Length: 261
Image 1 (cartoon, rainbow, N blue to C red):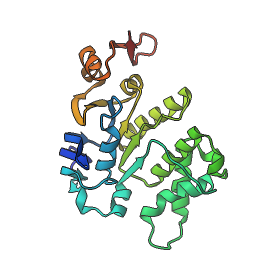
Image 2: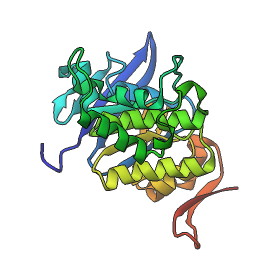
Image 3: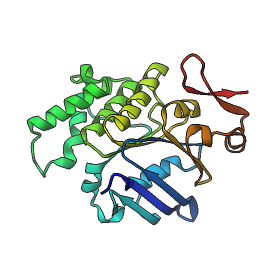
């Protein structure tokens, strides 16, 4: 695959639940080294799109390619070696330790009944260190807070050593400090580790600050894509979110910020 070829490409993707269309004619590209934010009002189709392009929900019409190869040509195990999907919420009912849960991310790389090697343990430890969860390694996941569990699930995803990381509302259970930490980590994973990161983000101000590009969804379609400044115009914010707002550059931090009137 050439450097210019997207890790993930979707063309004219449509998906329905029964007779109800959820995605209609979606096109997107995701390249190595970029952090792309998927934004839109509730019900726009963001979660569905993440599940469809990750292979979790088969049956979509259109074309989806992963590393230049049709998604339908991959087995579930092969997809898991390339794509890690972190859902909006995760429930763990069994008393596994954090280390055990993160090691589960190595399963796509192991044969049936194969025991984890020293390398697998090392990958899991690095994933915990990266997500700030190494100090929780021996804790039972049933004792964790929602925010702690969210970061452990992210560590499990990183233990897969994916090329693409798909995040569904990754900051939904986190306080403001950990929201910033997770979004900064997502950007660093893209810029420094070369991952392609696509994240559905509820907070459009945070999305504008941290993402390289934004894709704006409404009614199952992507209606705008590009830089935060190019996508989040006052007219689009009014049309999609029904708010009066505009972007500006914070004079103290230099970051893009959102002002809602």
